[in-house]
Structures are given as C-alpha cells and as structure tokens.
Image (tube, rainbow, N blue to C red; front, side, top):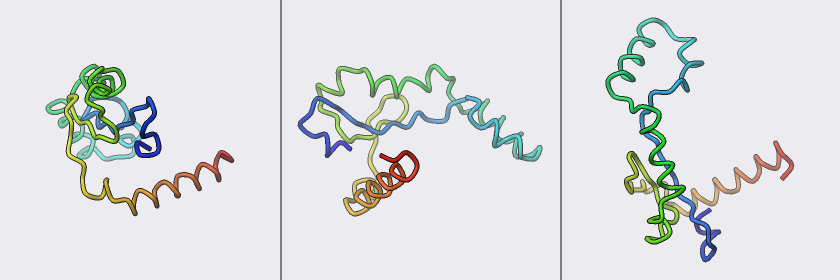
Length: 113
C-alpha cells in the first residue's frame, strides 16, 4: 500500500500494539481448560500492558508529526512507538504481489469490490 501511495500525502505503516491486557481472548479462553486459562491469566497479569499503554503505538503512528517529518512510509512500529525491523518476508515483492492479489480477490468475492 505504501508503494501504491508513494508521492501522495498519505503515510501507511504497520503497527504491533504488543501484549495488551484486553478481553480479546475471551472467546478463545471460554473453550480452554483450567491450565490454559490459568497460564494466560498469569501471563497477562505479569507481562501485559494496560489498554492505555497498548494504544500508544497505534496513536503514535496515526498522529505523530514525526511520521510525516521523517517520511515513515511502509514501516513497522512496535511497542511503545519504536521503529521496528521488518522481516525479510515482509519486504519480498513476490510475496507482496501475491498478498495484494489475494486481498483483491477476497474483497471482490465477499464485497463485490
């Protein structure tokens, strides 16, 4: 997307919010046993960020003047608001083309666009 929007006044980036203590796993956990639930709850209590901190990386990517100033396009941000390193598969043009085509096909199939 960043390549397709190059030269436009649009900055697109990927964001990983991190391990955030939310209820997003509620449905998954409802089908798990006591041990799995216990491990997840303990891990969340010990290591997960609160929801406010978990939102910071997304907010940074969406609102920080540094994104435009530093011309961060097609970058990857990780907690908290740090520029991360892209894995080789994330910059592979063949993979990107296949993913773009798959996404277009899926949107066409599901939404008719």
